[in-house]
Length: 371
Ligand code: MRU
Image 1 (cartoon, rainbow, N blue to C red):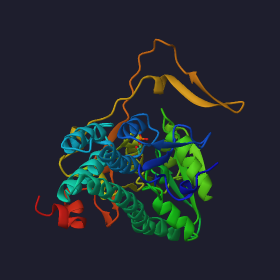
Image 2 (image 1 turned 90 degrees about the vertical axis):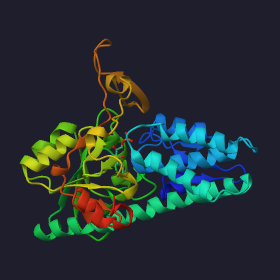
Image 3 (image 1 turned 180 degrees about the horizontal axis):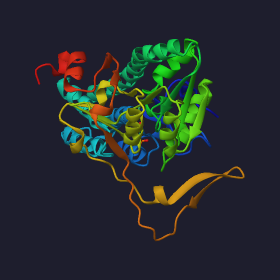
Image 4 (image 1 turned 60 degrees about the horizontal axis):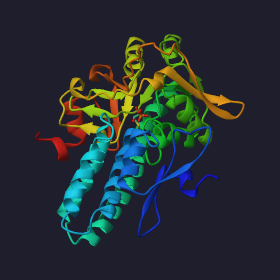
């Protein structure tokens, strides 16, 4: 049965005293919808590492809830803050590339320390803060959608009502966030506004987030889409079948370099060669002002088994199949960096800016003007 919260968001606090956090196991989608309840901070760490939850904004929110769980399970004495700090370190490092995770954890820790009260009050505040961060993510992604909508509207006008073809990579949709998604938010808004859109969905090996998650989301929303193999993008672009590329980001640096799922860079190169706009949609929690350019971003390397095996359904049951010889050497980098010069713009909750330090500073003057 589909849990009620799932219709509108991908993560939800449940229960009281002790509280817990419900998520849907994204490793099982689209073949099954199974809820998992995170009861301890270790469950949040496992869920992030095993990719029960994934996508930069959602792991940031899960990290925030992880701190609330840690506060709840911490010893109710002078060891409380030491325990919380130790768990914060573990949660923040559960996956290395998406900066949203450390952002969510650090924001929780800073605000909790700022409001430091007695332990029971601190636990209650932690839950309120995590709920607020989750709600904020949904509102932020909605704003990203509203700011990105004119890009699609403009193309639709030029095409005289013919469908706008959008190519996306991985899953930067509602499953990767609390709601709306980042790259998909402008698509949802365009669809709701009656603009005809069609989405080319890259399958996104090795874990197939495009094939398994993005197609599922678009089908659920009734948005026309077509699944393509990862190598098809260049061909589609050469033949005039892509009007715009919209992707998400796991970390965007001060100079506007965009780190995202492995393969994104190749799409940006093909888009550049074919003069097709390439935009990254991201909440400001994905901005890493502490890093000047993409060379310094830690790129996650995941298990060889993700490349060696492919998962799918045979006669209604989920199976794994090996696609290579058992002793084939394997490399599995999870992300790559698209240099700012290939990025037409960043779509954020405050508007669209150029992928540059000046562009980011223009939109976020209150945070970065003098830095
Ligand atoms: O490894 P994943 O599935 O967590 O990678 C997700 C992506 O690369 C998304 O494109 C990115 O997090 C942006 S999500 C709005």
